[in-house]
Amino acid sequence: MRTHLLSVSLAACLLAATGPALAGELGSDASVAPQAGGHGNRPDVPRTLHPRHTSGGEKGEVAVALPSMRRAAGQNWQTSWQVAPGVKFTKWSQTDARGPIVAHLLTIDPSTPGLRVDYASMGAVRRVAPVRDILGVDGAVAGVNGDFYDIGHTGAPLGLGKDRQRGLLHAREDGWNKAFFINRHGRARIGDLPMSAHVLRHPELEVTNLNSPFVTPGGIGIYTPRWGRTAGYRVTQGQTKRVRAVSVVNGRVRTNRARLSHDKPIQGLLFIGRGEGANVLRKLPRGTRIKVRWSLQGRPQMAISGNNFLVHDGIIRAIDDRQMHPRTAVGVDSDTGEVLLLVIDGRQADSRGYTMVELANLMVDLGADEAVNLDGGGSSTMVGKNRKGTVAVLNDPSDGFQRWVANAIEVTYSPPS
Image 1 (cartoon, rainbow, N blue to C red):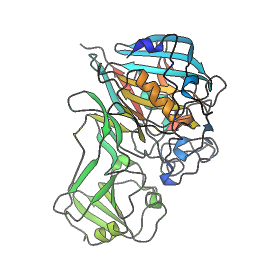
Image 2 (spheres, rainbow, N blue to C red; image 1 turned 90 degrees about the horizontal axis):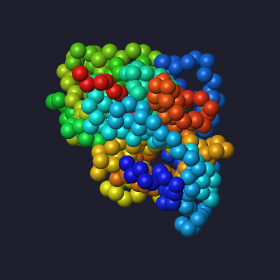
Image 3 (tube, rainbow, N blue to C red; image 1 turned 30 degrees about the vertical axis):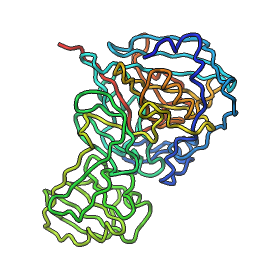
Image 4 (spheres, one colour; image 1 turned 180 degrees about the vertical axis):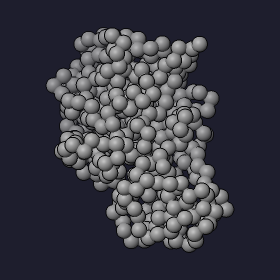
């Protein structure tokens, strides 16, 4: 990390931003709290609990247009401490002509013995929970919220997720594959990670999705027991005609139906097709042998996606400098190999939030050669050990409490023996 950039002046860090980090392709209702068919969620959560959610396409406050000479920022204060060996937390406040922000940074050295960066969730792909609870499953020392998710419908993450122990949990063939990952050599990277899936002896079955919140129109999705309970026509975006569900148990087709089940456990594999995908599935008779293999390009050890590159190949990719939101981002410093987890508070008097361009520029100033935008708004949450050694929420989520989210990036530490 280029620590000198966190000193008295951070003049270059506030160069504007991109608009809201949208997940609007699902047509999510921004006024609806994340629901996952009741699976793993509190039944008493009111549906208006999360009215401002970037996963639902919530519009942010519009930033004042400023010429470059007026974008210099002065730092107000800074504090930092070691969370664990190889993990440093830094928090600071700064102000420019647009107003103040409060930033929270975890600087992680993945080469530290006993330290590991991984994907984190509550188990079922479509189960949501507060970040602190998600990180608690593996006893993590720190982490942040992860991918955008299907708020108001299935609760599932929109993109890909691979856990070191559980393998590939959810992914798309194409469309939401901009990811942070640890490659098979143990190095942190950011890039596109398409999924490939092959049904042996059945090349006509072109799989487009694995445990995704919806099946690509015309495609075929596979759902496993790790998805959770079935979500009915939510996974076809309400389409009820020209859909097909084929269950595969012990390697053979057990049922082939034109109706989708809701809130049922999955045994084996469940293939769901839309349009042409449904037509292909319809031709599979009971007893047909089915064996599937799937993987991410390059076979990384872990991976999690965001919606857009902020910085890629050393070039700032963000273009929207208008809408301000709380933000979460992950970056990689190619020189040091460090992973940078950044949360910017927003929608508060002492922290206005960032535009996407501002976020990208700050990541560059912190040393990131690659960075990707994660879910923001009320989802933006950083958790880690405080000065007392207790795992706690380190930022100020804009809802005033931890939002229930789909997954997270976690950092675990076990002293080497």
